Image (cartoon, rainbow, N blue to C red; front, side):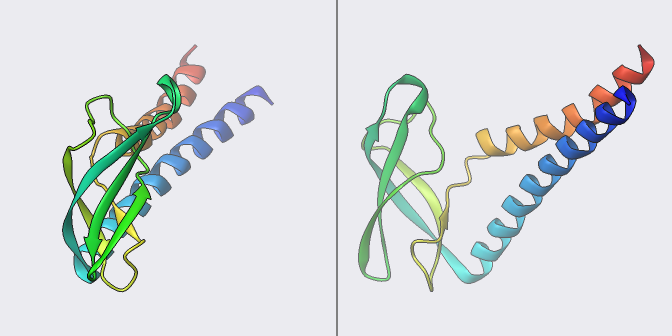
Length: 123
């Protein structure tokens, strides 16, 4: 029974990582085709230590948009400019592709899902 639980944990972790990585790649591909690259400015950083969030402002379709960024790094500062991909039809649909946090987390889940069952069965 323990072997089955570890195997299921590995499969679920690997599946989660693959799904996350695949969905990010699909969104990036879709926004490259349907959207455009826009320069956004970090206008606000809120929250305390672990729960920090960055807010950005960008112009798309002649309108200014202020939204919360789905990624935060300690290197970000108010006034920094970043490149984002924005859907031309729906400017609220955007992606900041830092390549750091979310992608690394997906890869971590894939590696975890593969190595834990292997190590479990070896020991």
